[in-house]
Amino acid sequence: MNFGETVAAAVAGDAIKRIYPHLVKAMPLGKSHDVQLSEKSLARHLTYVSRWAEQYNFLGLSSPKDSRSETIPLRLTNVPRRYRGNALADDTPDLHEDAFLSARDCLVLLGDPGAGKTTSLKRLCLQLLGEPAQNELGFQVPLLVVLRELDRDTSIIPYLADVLGITVDNPATDQDRTSPRIYGFDAVEKIGEFLDAMGAVLIVDGLDELPSDQRSAVERELQALNTFARYAKIIVSCRSGDYNRPMQGFSVYEILPLSNDEVRRISESWLGDASQFFDHLNSKPYRDIIDRPLLLSFLLFLFKNEGALPARPSQNISKGCLQTTKRLG
Image 1 (cartoon, rainbow, N blue to C red):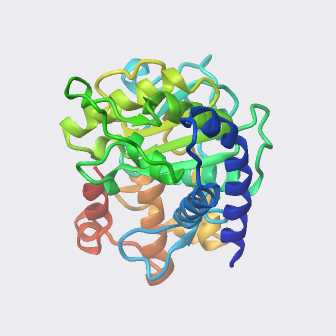
Image 2 (cartoon, rainbow, N blue to C red):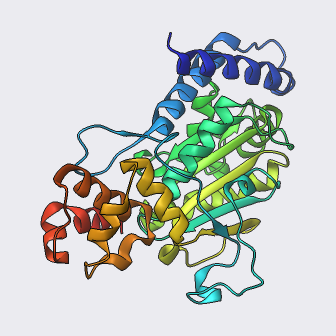
């Protein structure tokens, strides 16, 4: 068992112990729950979360990059761009990623394609798995739903029940077919109770990647889950341009464009001395696109491997840079 699996098993064991009294309370008389099954199921999920979070990749890389050492925390704002224009007012404070865990509000994380939404969520998962309960509100178990990997006929609640090793029952009556049950109780209410008990942070990545009908169903589930989960937290990522209707009970944060200092720090994490990279970049007509981490990283990748940057944006397209952006956007 490697380090990530050991951590996952320990976090899972502690989490299941905390939700077990709630399981027992929900179970009908004469029924028992397989605690070991729940521990194994949650440990397997947390191992998946750890592996998902540890690395990031994009088209052209020969091997993944390390999320811990080769990314930086990004600045946020709670005033989305559509309401603030392209510039922040002088009296609007920047927020930082520690804001994810500093309040109980559930939130939607917005950003342009390549702005760093998924990578920010990866850093959050690593923080929770690496330092359980070091935040003042006691959040400590990251549960992850990557929406593009969710089966079309699967929704959030059955997925989370499976993560916890719990069976969701079909409703017994024709009049109630849309309300899944756990031991006869409303499944959304019970899952919310279990998430509260374990101090969970439910991370839902890529709301904009769902077809419209499935997205509407997922939004309804998340808003209902937020109603029942009083202490757990839900964080949903979505592209800024695709967030067209508010989610009830969710605050909104948006990733800001990279500052000059952030560009420098990211560049130095790739190259060490990045002065030659900036000398090349400053003479190029596409120098303004580096305010997004993905595009900056792609240019750093090209420079590190070739010692130069293409002269024109069209050459970037042939090398995959803008293809990557189109795929994300």
